[in-house]
Length: 325
Image 1 (cartoon, rainbow, N blue to C red):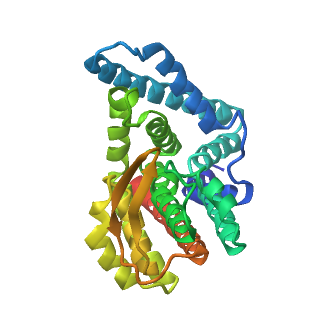
Image 2 (cartoon, rainbow, N blue to C red):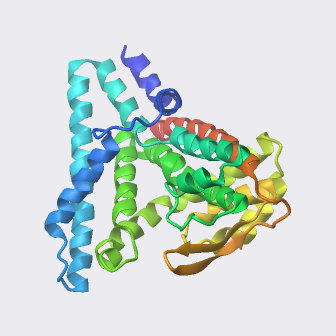
């Protein structure tokens, strides 16, 4: 039994990935990521002071990060401990579930496929409304090409923090490492805004997330090159565009997923985005060799799934190597 459990440990990323593919991301008030958000909100409520100085906001924002990570990781540890006390297989199942809730390939694919189908039917009105659920920009006047761009950018960029990063954190630190990462990433999503409220209070959460994703993003870059080769897309152009344009993204990590996808599909990402009454420009990545259409969303989703499978394999292999060492 001990030998089997020990070797089964390396398959946790695979079971978690398959569980996500089958079950998906349940929309429930009691979803663990929603509960993580509740923990963040709890500490924010008590530590954020609207009239605090910028220095205090920075300090209490950092304290929120530390307390949230400590709380969620401790809860995860207790759940694994309690489940393992009941039965070794219960402990194993709990570890699989923890990794499962940290990854989200199916939800990314579902959102993208729905938009691709709406574009194929020519329903731009509904596509504009639905793409507004996954991006922060104004989507009311987007055409098919711009809706496609917004969707591809979302699917590609979220391959890093929604799949590869938690898998790599599992490989190095175990299930609690994946949970630790998901908690930090959720804090960035909730606090990492550059507005009046969160510019200082959420700064440490945003910077910490950038640091955690730095290595996984560059591994994702290589995985997307390999994915392009496997799917017989233009992997050479994916490499060329990635090297040329990945650093242009406003995020230190986002471009390392988006640029190789743009190169592989011979499309151009980036451009003008409208936020409220403000028009901004994001540097282009890729060349406009092909006009973006809904079919490019489908191709991106296919690349995301292959990249995810490669991430599962690397996570399992890396786990094995680190255990041996």
